[in-house]
Image 1 (cartoon, rainbow, N blue to C red):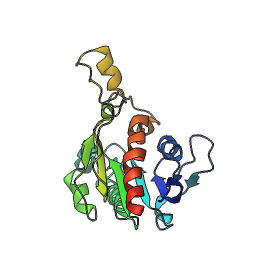
Image 2 (cartoon, rainbow, N blue to C red):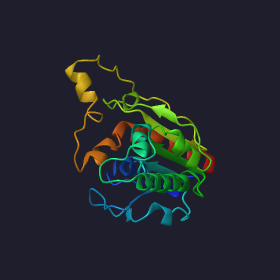
Image 3 (cartoon, rainbow, N blue to C red):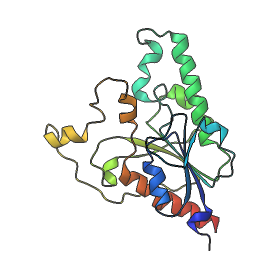
Length: 219
């Protein structure tokens, strides 16, 4: 029987170690990669462009929020009306760069792939090689008290199953405001990082369900 230690897992575009630790705690040979350094000390972080390590013989790839500012629905308005200091040409060039990275991850030479990203606008979808319709899941399906429509673009993996559904608080309550913290995040240099955070309950579900599926299919 194949053991978790034999399954090589790459967690891309991640620095927090949340998903890395979820897989390591279950015995997988897991590694994390990002162009930025790890948020905490670990010898399992590869600092660099994920595209440089996609062909290193991984069994499972999970990419947490590759740069999506130009791909997601919430940012499509900037393609027609650029923000201050940007041109139309720069905005569309950024879209091409983001789509190329997403495509490289989704179509990586790896048996099982998940790429996490918000719902995309049509200009982004048209540029993604072999685009697939995502499964949309919220963190509160997995015991994480937060609102965030998380798109999981899956290749050769099953849909994620809820593990610990919470009851969302009603609108206009303090609890609802707390659950909406990601959407209410104020502008600032670290806003992107806060909005792209990986929740521990969801990371555990990835490790159990996606890791387990890849492990069973490797036997």
